[in-house]
Image 1 (cartoon, each protein chain N blue to C red):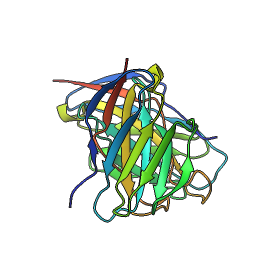
Image 2: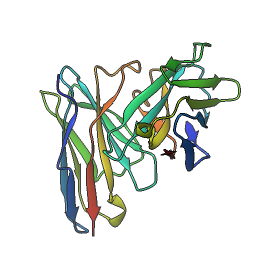
Image 3: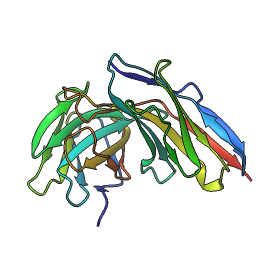
Amino acid sequence: ETGVTQSPTHLIKTRGQQVTLRCSSQSGHNTVSWYQQALGQGPQFIFQYYREEENGRGNFPPRFSGLQFPNYSSELNVNALELDDSALYLCASSLDESNTGELFFGEGSRLTVL
Amino acid sequence: AQTVTQSQPEMSVQEAETVTLSCTYDTSESDYYLFWYKQPPSRQMILVIRQEAYKQQNATENRFSVNFQKAAKSFSLKISDSQLGDAAMYFCAYRSAVYSSTLGRLYFGRGTQLTVWP
């Protein structure tokens, strides 16, 4: 059974650019959520996808968008990057959208915006 | 909105000793879950322990136990017989058990960095 994997592990972008982060969920999991963890902070919920549909969103602007594919892997896209977007982006998967399912986290993608 | 507060940015403990990490939360809901996650330098969040709000009994996982005080909205983590491998950032988190727009969302505190001295 493979765990949650994220790519890339590190990347550097400049202001105004666009970035795509990828996540492969744990085998059998159909729900993926994304979190932003700024330095010295706890993770903040960005959004959640269940069976290819967004079904929950945190307080993030529309330039943060996502996709979930039929194999339940997911992408996080951020347009018009700003310096404050520098953070660790964590992906988590769970068995279903219910609140009882345990979340399994990946190791994150560290984004630096210069 | 739900908020989670960890008032101890840093804690330290001697190996084999016991340490308690504090967490308080604010919610108007009666049914929810509380978690402690560990984040080592590898960055991967690892679930340490979980508590269902409807259960009065405090959860225990080997050397890890919680003191859940629902009325006081307090959820502390006790680590007994501390080991060097326990050194990490610890996050307290809240998750609603009510089907709503916040379905599945975890609310995290800012974390407590635990150092374990040999």
